[in-house]
Length: 362
Image (cartoon, rainbow, N blue to C red; front, side, top):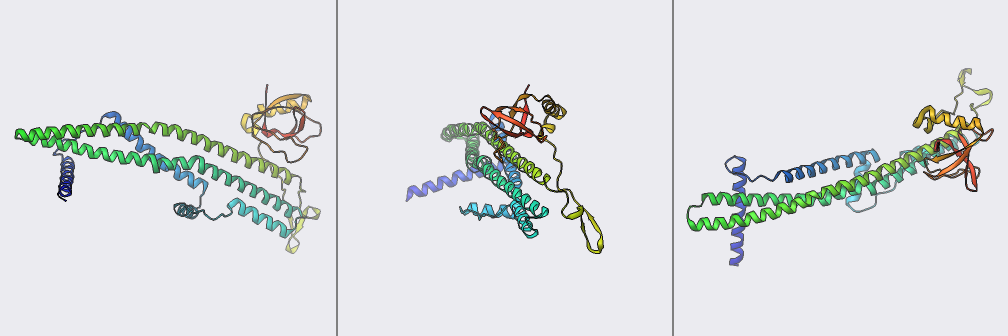
């Protein structure tokens, strides 16, 4: 019992000396031991890493899920360690509406058929968006969150302990200055040596943790590469889906009724709307007229050339050839073939390939 009372009294005395030291420092009445410049820089870097990690995480979450109510719901389910209910995203909702309206107007009509095809494509894009969100959450957001909730909290704990040890050290220095008697000075010197040793040990622990932020940056760089790769895959899929949709819509008649016009109330004729639209090719955007000229030259020569595949491509029919990114195939032009396609050969396999997925090699 006496031991516990003495211990409580000692703890109270230590807390009081820290409080007095802290207050006098704030009032400019006591000296303060400054951390070395290297440790201060490491502390600033760790704090900056924490702030920018939080900001990047927040903006990424907004990008992947713009609806704040849905984000809040997902956050609550995550804290409750429960799975959030599955709901259709905006592309899937739009696709469902288009498919239902196309069925209402009639799949046999040009407009109804076009709506159904557009709806199916929107649902495909919705599926690709789900894969992007899932991949980004696992490979990008989770490592960032783990740093904030794990490593950085440990850094905060040790930094706070370092501050306590510094207050103890400076309080011991102040006590030594105020000591008058020989016995008092000896006890104060003993306490100063002990607090100095504890401060130095804690400073080393904190320094090692802070230097580990460099490893965190390297890890986050790999996560950033994964995030960019996920976005590249997503946008390539969306482009592929839309190019296929554009070709399907381009095969439809340009009018939705007889005589190329429909009748409105009062006998007024309504001009027809062309379904087809132009979409700039990737080749043109990537290398301008040089890439287009290369394909034009290949068509006019009726020869063949090697080409590198830019993106994966899944054949939509038996007449097409599936492609893998970065592989090299032989392409040639066939009379009467659509200008957006070439004949591709890979070993014993051959089939049509879209030029937007190719880069001609010299």
